[in-house]
Image (cartoon, rainbow, N blue to C red; front, side, top):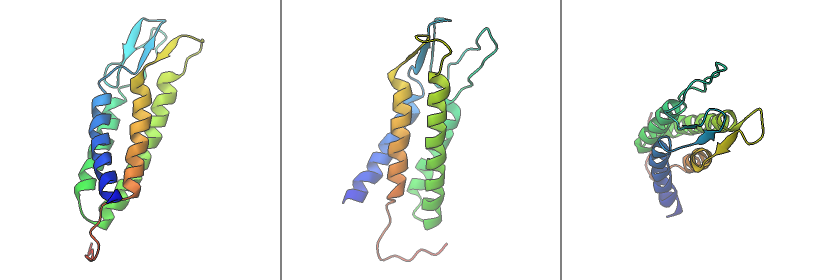
Length: 138
């Protein structure tokens, strides 16, 4: 029963993570700009954080697809991709949230949700939904 709930929580977290890529993540006071996963402007110093929402969306879509495949190999690959997604989410949090001067960056709820939802997805892939009593060939 618990594994079925964790499976559905993982699916809802994946969809929520894709939506979170569109909400504000951080606000930079030095350029008066708010960044999301898909809206990032180049700084005057030449720094460019890229559009982190694209790889997050791709990883989340692959995880969702592999969650629906009832094979053991898919569950193993899914665990690896979820770990990569979580590591990328932590990297994104560090890059978007770091600043040279105190008070330059205001972290908004979106950047925290990226890390939390990625962790929930990782936990949900640790407990895959498998049918007991069926043999898995390939």
